[in-house]
Image (cartoon, rainbow, N blue to C red; front, side, top):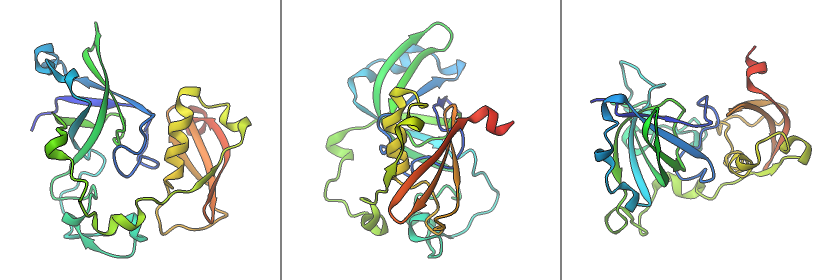
Length: 228
C-alpha cells in the first residue's frame, strides 16, 4: 500500500472531528498528492464527478494488536459490539473510508493538481491510499438500515455561541464550526455540566460546556498561545 496524497484542513487534533463524513459540509479540505503521483493525467475526468470516496489510514490509531469488540462512543462507551459492526479506528487494518464532495480541482505550481473537497472527517495530515469516484446509481442505498447508528443519527445539541466570541472566528468557517459543535464532540459517557472542554479548530481553541441539550461556548483563544 502506497500513500498517494495527504489531506490538509482545520482538524489539527482528533477531538472534535465529525464522527462521519458529510457532517461538516461547509468546511473545505485540500488533498495534496505526493510528488510521485502529481501526474495530471491521473485525474483526467475527475471534475465530472460531484463526490469521491477516500480510502485512508487511521494514522493516529496504529497498533500491533486488535480487539474483536469495541465500545462505540454513541452507545455511551460501555456497550461492546463487534469491530466489524462499527467504524471504529481500532481495527486489524487501520483503514478508513469517507465520502466527500468535490468542490474544485486547482492547478498549482508548487503542489501540482490539488483537490478541494468538503465533508471530510479526516485529521489534517492524514495519509490517503486511494481516491475513487462516488457513483450514485450503485453506491446510494436509500433503503439501507444503519444498525445502532439509526436511533442517534438526528441527535443534535443547541449551540449557544455569543456574537462577541463568534466574531473571533473567520466568517467563512463559522457555519461549519457550529455544525461540528451541534454533533456533540464529547464522548457520550461524559456528562458533567461543569466540565470545560477544549477543541482545536484551525487557528482557534474553542472552549465549551454542555448542560442538558445545550452546548455553550465560553472562550475562544488562539491555538498557538494555548499550546505555549
